[in-house]
Image (cartoon, rainbow, N blue to C red; front, side, top):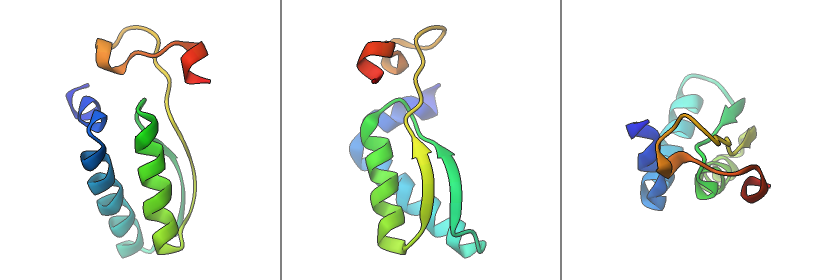
Length: 80
């Protein structure tokens, strides 16, 4: 959970998305299915990083409504 909580910081999400996409390309991967954190801006950061590199990703925000720290919890209604 501590690593995922760090994605509450948009700058961290953007830096991680850039690193992730660079490493994917470095290994010859140009498309992927990716589960982002519960933070909506983590998904935006990933799609923006992928678009700059011409990558195709299927990705989305995860939703946790129990058994996690408060900073990672969401409700079904607010997740929609």
